[in-house]
Image (tube, rainbow, N blue to C red; front, side, top):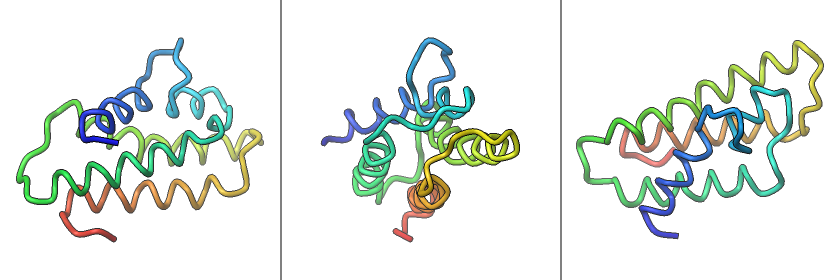
Length: 111
């Protein structure tokens, strides 16, 4: 996977368009991620980390996508738990891994 593919995937997965099967939309609807969706997100985050190591700025679209996937993903997961949504058992840990990868991109040090 290259930088542009990873960037596009993360922007698509963070899309708030209700017609999509994006990660954020599925969590907002109380649905679990599609199988392989979290793996693709994590791989994309690692590709971005490697590509952006020496950069001092990030573009706004990418920054917003990272924010939505990490912060809104966690918030929507917690809201789903309160409503007894069907959540995969490892989604909590996956969200922690996503947040750590996003932190890594912002800090420049893999965590």
